[in-house]
Image 1 (cartoon, protein in one colour):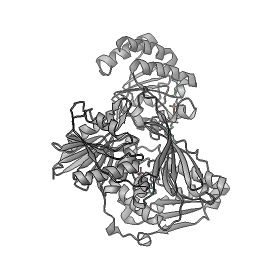
Image 2: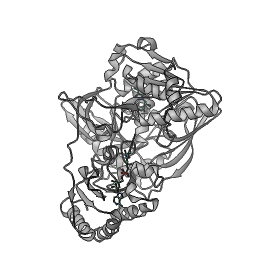
Image 3: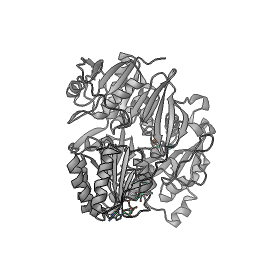
Image 4: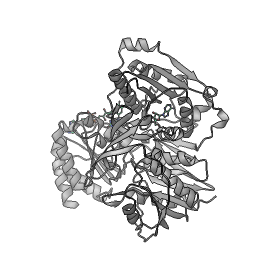
Length: 320
Length: 260
Ligand SMILES: Cc1cc2nc3c(=O)[nH]c(=O)nc-3n(C[C@H](O)[C@H](O)[C@H](O)COP(=O)(O)OP(=O)(O)OC[C@H]3O[C@@H](n4cnc5c(N)ncnc54)[C@H](O)[C@@H]3O)c2cc1C
Ligand SMILES: Nc1ncnc2c1ncn2[C@@H]1O[C@H](COP(=O)(O)O)[C@@H](O)[C@H]1O
């Protein structure tokens, strides 16, 4: 049975509709070729988000006409929209919000959830997904056992859909009770959006214990700036208090797959590798030729990073 | 709240050091692999115990797992949890996250709780799914990936870091909260506590005991097969002086890898 409707959940930040949404749009077209694609807005700043979404290439934007202050409320609102508009797959970016709302919605609608997929393929009458498990040490091919389902897509696994449109915005009446909004955000210190979010970055420069001291991260940041890259770290560097834990890459940190990953003074423990070894191109600088990071890197320089990184930063500035 | 009853959802997983290998049938080879409490669940266990130590109350852990999970449950008990509940039926061997959530929600009707703590994700399937479904099934509020937690009266105040920024959230109890790294630093159980843990009660339920049956548990997803990523070739080591190496690296990133 072909799926003839796909919903894509809209997330908007200071810079507009998030790239993860554009990637979810691409995934929706793969999962449900030819389907009507509906952007769904269920957020606290509804009108502004709907206006941003209307510029996407979608059939229409459906906006919940209530302020939605929690993930569970968002799930309830989307469930009501899906029931009113008709069954379809619902696609989310696997962001911190997406992976909270998606399972709540799947439960609400009694549907399967296929989280964090890296590829999708229609095979005969069903859709098959690939999703990394064990932080990328293995991949599972999975099939949802229902005609419609909820999916979250891994950042950068699908291309951005950058087509623009002028979609009509439709308001949908949703009924939310106080019970649906029990969790209340009492304060939000906004993330510095000039910094690129790790999982969405095209390039990442990560630092490890080899930096020797917290100030060493200045070198990492300088190279990252030159590359317009995000800054990551090994767990040991996080535990040393040199950088925030949100920058940890690995099995118990973030799984990333940028186009370019540069590892500076990182040994390449299996838990670190799990989070970054699906990057397209990996560069390692380490003074130990036996460091396991060289087994997964494409290019390596065996040297003291302090003698290499400043030169590399200058050289990159010349070509970028 | 005095005498807070905390229930921690604990899953046993491979240690994060494990390499994943598949046998000829495409199944994961678990021979020689060590099992641990999934790291995020361990943060939850530690936090619960610290709250119990500070304010009284009781910490119970709940797991859906075979008798192979007894060893890791004993670790949670040795860390300081008071009791453990384990639910098992052989049909759960292939349970997906939806079924696991159904089983947990049903078992929770037999265990009193004011607060449910879980890991933000299990380090094996990384679904971020089970706690959300449990919360939905029981009509409880959910907050994922918290890095701090305090309870006053019947309200929990938590902090977390999302893509939006640092959020402080208040949520009335009972609630389901999932742990991020940073919530608490897990302790190593002491030898006397390991001994004591051997005498702590472990309640085992079958599906019938919690009002379920194998036939009522319908899978939502089917795993068609597993694979492991193709091994990477290993690095081309670029030699020479730092100046030469850097120039050559940048040239190859541009011309060969085409990533600049
Ligand atoms: C449950 C669990 C979960 C974990 N999860 C993660 C995770 O998510 N992410 C993660 O990263 N780790 C994780 N780890 C930790 C992991 O096992 C390693 O301990 C950690 O990755 C090591 O960090 P590192 O490479 O920075 O430090 P080290 O292993 O100490 O390596 C430092 C490297 O720097 C090199 N070096 C030193 N000085 C210089 C110099 N001047 N110039 C160049 N090179 C230099 C050394 O040769 C060495 O290779 C986890 C561990 C456990 C037990
Ligand atoms: N079999 C299980 N038994 C008990 N708790 C579980 C089980 N599976 C998952 N959980 C809990 O749900 C969290 C998230 O798991 P998952 O949804 O699989 O990523 C885990 O960290 C545990 O706290």
